Length: 364
View 1 (tube, helix red, strand yellow):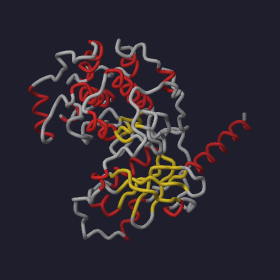
View 2: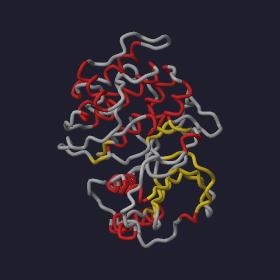
View 3: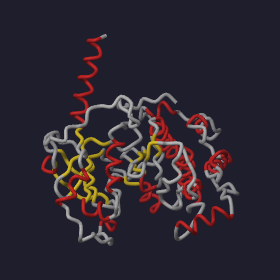
View 4: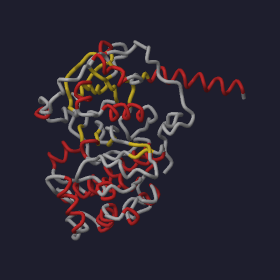
């Protein structure tokens, strides 16, 4: 696949480091935006539809309470997500434009995708057709190809972290537990039970095949209306994985054998036997996807077979209060240093990049 994604000229592994976005820059703050309404919620706060006052552009603004972040011992997670998003910019992920903070909150300003997350649509439709599922699969693996090419594992691919735009294209979001791949990563076991690959659950070293296992679980869910391994907690799911190899054994009506084979190969328990273990080329050459028009997809030239309705695509019942408790002993004033370096302004980034480019040309 020839990607037309725009890649930021940096690498989180430390190659070609760029200057930090100015922490002193006060050009972006909460007052830079008009808040419209909440469109979702995360683990630390709500996600808002906002309009930038100066440019009239719409964005999704993720607001996170510092006290809740600290109470849930997730400082590394939110700082890690901000740092990783700084290195990525592509068609099939939800891109970051700004990051800033005030005394009480952290803010991430992201692409606004109005189509709602895949979980919302699974709840509404239960199952999807093969044509719809193939398009969804192509979007997800295109995003993963880009993420993996930057040396990053997402590690939490699930319907809640896949968001439709208004045209029905799907985008990967939430890089909170993403990691730069290292050969020894058996201790990195975070994820969502039900979508976690066996090698992650069993605390083994893992690579890109772990993300492709999650894709297989999602496609199984779109085909069958349920996940291949179901349990109330991580232990029950782990026990199911030990006892049996899940697979689609009968071809559902309206589906092909190629689709069944594709899904069954993605959910193989043994990562070395799993489709995608050798990379995107193995995915794209499978009979189910070998004739897919990847270039047209990357250009946005295809019409999606599943287009979300034009109204708001989220359930307002999910915007309620949090049930977790905030640690009352936390001194917020003395905790501000935990979030040093959080600010990011893509305009500053572009200015620095252009200046480096001009300098390189002049020296040449």
